[in-house]
Every structure is written in C-alpha cells, then in structure tokens.
Image (tube, rainbow, N blue to C red):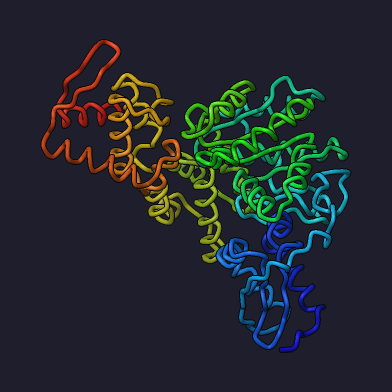
Length: 473
C-alpha cells in the first residue's frame, strides 16, 4: 500500500481548517489526527476510539468534501486507531499561546468558532461575524448594551462577570461577539477568547485524554477577556464545572474580565453547582427580552437593506407584527421574501408577502411560550420560577413542574429533550414521566393536594388545568 504525495494531504488539511474553523481544527486535527492518502482512500488515524468516533460523527462531511475538492474525485474515508499517532513533541508549545494576542495571523486563526460557524480568517478585518455597530438597540436590550460598553471602555470593569440571559434569538451571541470585536479593535494587544461552553468542554476532554491539561489551563487562564456563550451547557457536568470554576477564579483574581451568556438566569440553571451560581450572580446579571414591535421594525428595515430588498413600510410592519418569537425568525422571513423577489422580479406587495409568509408565520410563532407557562404555574402554585427550574422534589414544586412540562408539550412544538433542557437540563425521560402523570391525573380528575403560602390546598386536576390555561392566556 503506497502513500501518495503529501502535498495533497497538506491541501486537504487546509480545506478542513477552512470548513470547520480554526478552533475546531486545532482541537481535533492539529497534532491529534494523522491523514494519509493511499490506495484505499483517505486514511484518518486518531490516537484513541473517542477521538476517532467524534471526528467520524461530526466532521465526516468536511473530510469528504475536502478530499473531493483537492483530488477532483470522491475519495473513500477509512478510520483507524493508533495510540502512537500523536507525539507530544510534534508541536511543543504552540497551543499554549493565548488567543487574540497582538493581532498576529496565527492568533487570529485560532479564534474559536461559535455554534458550528466557521472561525476567523486572517484576511478579515474583524475576527468574528457580529459587531455592536449592527446590533439594534432598544428598550429590551438597552441595559445589556450599556453594560457591554462599560466592559469595553473601562480598563477595570465595574462588574465581573457580565452575565446576559434570555430566550432564543434575542441577541446574546451578537452582544458577546460584539464585545470581542470592539476589544480587538480598540486594544490590539489584548488577549481574549470567544467560544461556546460546548467548545470549552470539548477542549477540556481532549486535554484530559492527551495529558495536556497544563497547556489547556495556560491557554484559558492567561486571558484579559473570556467570553463564553451557552454557559448552561455545563449543567450536570461536574468535572467541567470544577475546571471552569478554577478558570473563572484565576481570571477574576488577575483583575480581568469574563462575559457569559445563557438561556436562563444562573439560579434557574438546573444541576449547576452552588459555587458557580454564587460567582455568576456576584457580577451583573442582565436579562435580554424579545424585541418589541418598534425594535422588530428596525431589525426588519436594517436586514432588508443588507439583502438589497426594497419593501414598502406596510410590508415591514406586517412582518414585524406577525413574527414575535425571535430575531432569527424575522431574518428567515426576510430571506424568504428576498428569494421570492429575486425569482419573480416584481415588487412585493402586502398581499404577496402575506401569502408567501403564511406557512413561515404559522410554524415559527407558537400560541404561548414556555416562559408564559412557567410564570403562570409559579404564580398558581405559590413557588418561584427558579424552584421549577431547580432539582427540588417537594410535593408543591414537583406538581408545578409536572404541569409546566405537560402544558409546554401540549401548547408548543417543543420535543421532550428540548423541554427538559429549558427547564433546568432535565432528562427527557423525566419530562415523559411528568406528562404521563398529569395525563393520568386529568383522566381520573384526581384531587390534588399541595402546600401553598396560605396553607394546604385541595383542587381537582381539571380545575388546576383550567386555572393555568386561563392564567396563560
């Protein structure tokens, strides 16, 4: 079996890095995986089954496309394990260099990608996609925006961490990336890093398995600013929470800045250790609410300009009034209108927009939201929203949580795993059992007993359901 020219392998490596982003490439391929072209195809050799399975499960398409683009034909992929394929001396201390230092080409290429997006390229003016200049600011995110400006403008931030939370598509990622880009612009020598909590966890696992924890810790603990998105991902991952706590303490004691984003308040993230919750709430916790009508109109106007899409004010108002669930859904609607306008080559009228977006509006905006259901149940049962998201198992909290899960399943299109994640990272089996329990209560109209703030209450299940449904509406 003869190995073919290594120039092609180098070109494949380069294409893979472009497709999956510099951070993902550094973690899973650079010094960790060996590629070789031979008579059987592209041989992908990893140090252990964990790395091999991860690469095959997450990067198969990128590998296949890269080989096709370089070789001009479809190349079969072959995965194998070789414990000796990674040698510590291959790249001695290259990975230990902090990200964002001095604006060099190497530093820019190592900036992590967020949510699967491609990482920063060296020839881009800004290393991340989203900037504060393009963020539409209104009453729902004004406080978070002002806090971001304080982090950027002051040498010593007045609060640490800055913790922003809110639902899907309200601009949390935009704010974090905007902070990093502005820091990059104002302070070129500043050492900073932006990544998701999942990426942090992946890098920690790889460091653990390749015995490079010291390199991992040096990379993260010597930063001026660390911005982590979706921090709730660390819930129920005790070892990673402990590692992040030490990272947090190291950066904080050095007087540096941490910025975090989550879909829930720190106290509402289930299975998050008390030490981390305490650290998170010791800084500034800011909620970003979904944009109001005025903000949605501004967002639609700006996005239409970016798409070179000419829309009458009535059409923009229709889109903004019809889609209230998040910014991404608004952008999706405008992209759909833009595609239709490009194909039909006729000005879009209000009637045409209503017809084009009819299905989109139906699919993206549920009648009620999880936050509405949770708030209604918390008020009715006399508990807090944080209690429902927690792991408390007393009768009142368990009953309230079960009804929230049942109603969320009934009135939204969320799956069992999605409901569990939103309600404090509960297992999907827990959600299924809760829904079945409530269904049984309703079937027999069982009399339910729980302790409220004014004493014990006895109410039939159907009356509870009616009361909650009325509160939600």
